[in-house]
Image 1 (spheres, helix red, strand yellow):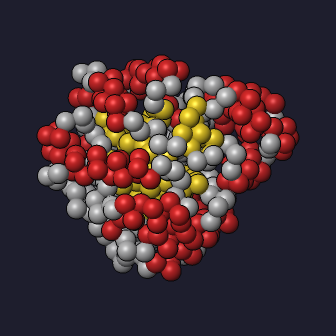
Image 2: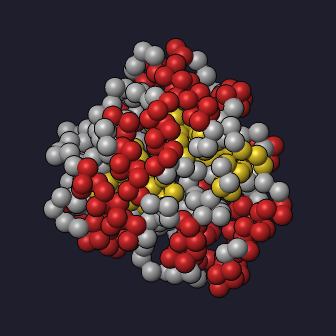
Length: 400
């Protein structure tokens, strides 16, 4: 793979190439520098990468992050995930998307949505599904994003070929995250309920490694059992042996009925143990660990669902994030601008995961295990009590 660690000189050169940073609050800049120090910056195809959920430090997308978000407190989303198909050959037991239905978005609608999202302020865009590679227009869609927005592909690897990988890279793909939940084929295939899922993922990793200019990650959902039995380190050592850049980790989220059980929801003690594990591995520098609970912890950026994050599924339903089984409107009926500003008025951001905290309300308002419609979502939100801001937003907004 075309990557290496970044020297201190290269890092500071990149930071000072964004002179508008000095206009941000000094206390916010100090926070961000402390956050950066928790990672070994990687250089992939000339791009200086912290991790795959932020744009490279020396990119146009990072400049937009500074100008439109760091230097402004106006309501703007920064991250969006878009389901470009709901079709998927796998049938994961924890899938947050399996019960979503409706009229599938056409390619032209997706491309317009991306343009509108960027106009709102999005500088990071994730393609998800279903299996996004099953959308025959994925290269065209990727190409439409442009060079001022980081693009990440979440994929099982199904149907990937070397030619398609190259076409995606040429179209602007920067990050890829390949689904892999265990170090054995038996367990991974069982969780995915798809024979051959493990080998499909390994083949996809090899295809992108041979390509050379894409940041390669593994997207893993950690089961409660894996966390409880302290098997995460064994899994990470396996990922190091694969030679990937990053492990993107999340615990199973209580987004579906099967997981609406307090015994299956991660505890704060378990989250903090994973945060400490990430910090330890990242100082070693063999593999970047990017645990969602680290990013969205109260000590960092908190939960930005519906505030800075948007999820639009393959049918146009807009949710605060991929893990929230609720709709705040549909882009086939209203503009994304209208829906986002409605959603933002209900989601102020807080110090911990919205879904982990409020899954029992999803259970209360859910009908036939379907995502909540807009009216039920608004009724549910009347019962939600948001907590204080995370450390970053306390500093950014100047209030707790």
